[in-house]
Length: 101
Image (cartoon, rainbow, N blue to C red; front, side, top):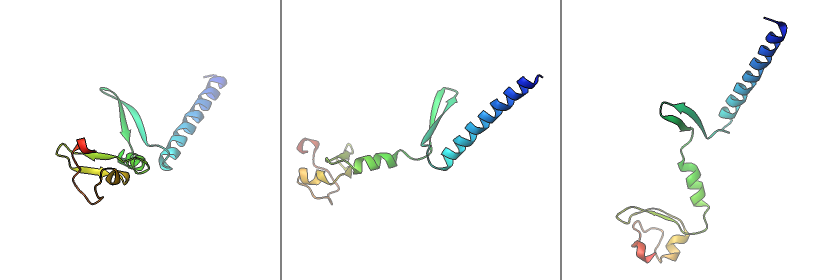
């Protein structure tokens, strides 16, 4: 092995180590939400946190009324502006028929 080959290999290894350390730092500091790996049936996404938290934050910051309804009309999520616009109180656990909203 020539010296230039050895130096090139050392530089490559240092670069790879720096990338691995940066990845670990990002994981440890919470900068990573998910990562993608090659699976048997193609790329797979693995999340480190539930998708519910960002969705909840988005919905909570909406200025419009929003509701998630079951097939039977039960309200699972109702944001503050919705009860006022549908003339219902926030305590109501069942939503009015969709046609009345």
